[in-house]
Image (tube, rainbow, N blue to C red):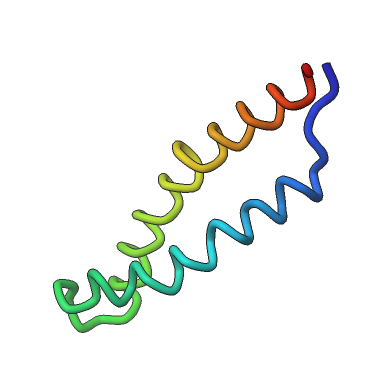
Length: 69
């Protein structure tokens, strides 16, 4: 089995990150403290697990399943 194309994985990451980076700060911004560094740290702490534990495993499963066919 060949690993998925790294460029395709980068594109999928980009496509998944754009809405997360756009919407999550708007949704949780009102509940965060005023310090911008703290806001960024909290927002990144939400986005990174979504990408790492949800988006990429689903992507890898779909790409490996497609490669097996």
